[in-house]
Image (cartoon, rainbow, N blue to C red; front, top):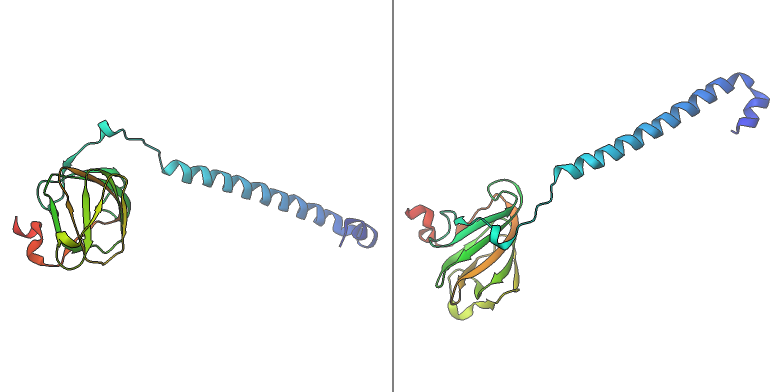
Length: 178
């Protein structure tokens, strides 16, 4: 019903119409303010940080990985639920026996010769070679193995935490033998 029709037929409704217009305008303004500030609050929860190669802080890899590797956490927390990014530096001859994870892994080779394969046992002859810039997307709960194929290798792993590793052969788990 238009304002002109109301004025003509029911002039007593005009104040109510005016109140309704003011209420609707205020609801629209408040909703817009809430939407704008909520977006800003969400954006402020995630801060951007850049890491240069020389500022990466390396430390010993977790005990669930064979000794000798170093790890650096670039983003997130591998021990908590949520996304994380780590780099793993492996020395020459480093091998991670067949294992699986409950979450998918995206692995990018940063430097060196890194090799991986699928299966229940590490098999050098069946492994695929990935050089710097190589990438592999490993599905959750799929048995795989990895090793450096010569000198030192550095890989970046993007995944979801908490980080877990289950070795196909429980006796391969270095955290159980320490």
